[in-house]
Length: 157
Image 1 (cartoon, rainbow, N blue to C red):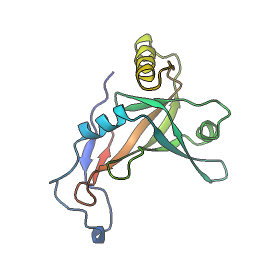
Image 2 (cartoon, rainbow, N blue to C red; image 1 turned 45 degrees about the vertical axis):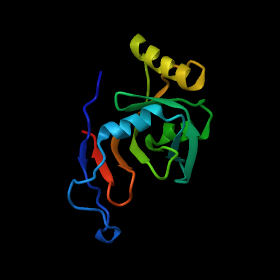
Image 3 (tube, rainbow, N blue to C red; image 1 turned 180 degrees about the vertical axis):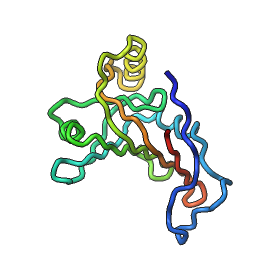
Image 4 (tube, helix red, strand yellow; image 1 turned 90 degrees about the vertical axis):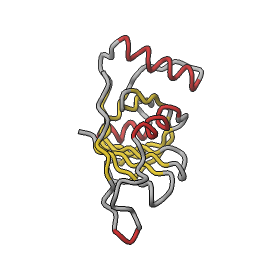
């Protein structure tokens, strides 16, 4: 199932940061998707039950505007997500930026098609197969290549 593209706009950032008010120079969602699909590593940020932040790199597969990733049940990020499903995902570049914020859900009874898709992506990127364990469902995302002119916000409905 393909999820619709998000609504594109400028983020709410104080005017003195110089974010343009018009749409000229805004990033297309297709560019962000390409970055998310081809990324090898994804930094995920979570919060533990004491409200302490935790960030860790992980592997994953971006499919239909969702990030499928895993981690053992005893890893800090997975234990954090069990208590608080909010997540922030950031790619490694600070120059070609993609940040995704959303909610994590367990993948229960995945379709054979999804299992194959995730496995194929893991095989291509990491030389191993992995099944869909957890999925991050985006609520909003941010992207830019030249700050502040290309800063773009994406809202998922």
